[in-house]
Image (cartoon, rainbow, N blue to C red; front, side):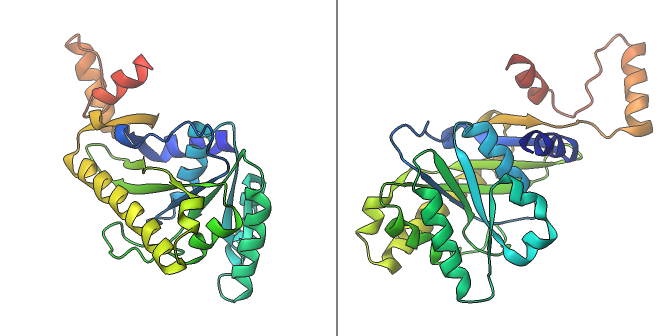
Length: 253
């Protein structure tokens, strides 16, 4: 399924980029991971599946999923999604019980879109759901990683997806804080990561990022056909995109 979403992202987006300053640690000695992110778009599920496969290949990954939506998109069960009823108090108990079982093994990760709703990357405060802070109590050996996710259109037809991880937070240290302060600490860390990532996105400089996936470049159709012909007639190499940097980077990898 990771291979399927790899192709899916390549087909529909120009690139998936990881900030060079936001590369996650290798995870050695971190125990189980709680990777919590903002939730800007429908694309998040596909992007996080690809990120899990590319950046944490040695871990089993799981994610809470709206129970009603999981009935509609049952394929996500095969990729580690577990149902949570978002419209009742029972949902919180479901989330904690499933997370406790998952985080009991050190080679696992739970990925959480912690806002619990779609929200613009510029919205402040982020309004993280309190359940993410409760995980420090049930998994004191775990490590929390803030993950910023953003999308933008640069020079190509397809959109760009951007990721950046913040500094790791030890569950034991978070557990020592009262719950409101713990949640605030998690939100502050994610907000800072988002703000730094947004500054790089606004700069529109691809060299600030590592390209994890490169999609189909150019406009296609008649327009690219004419450009290809013009390049051939003048003895130039045809480059379908407006920038050549991404293609050169991917050839060098």
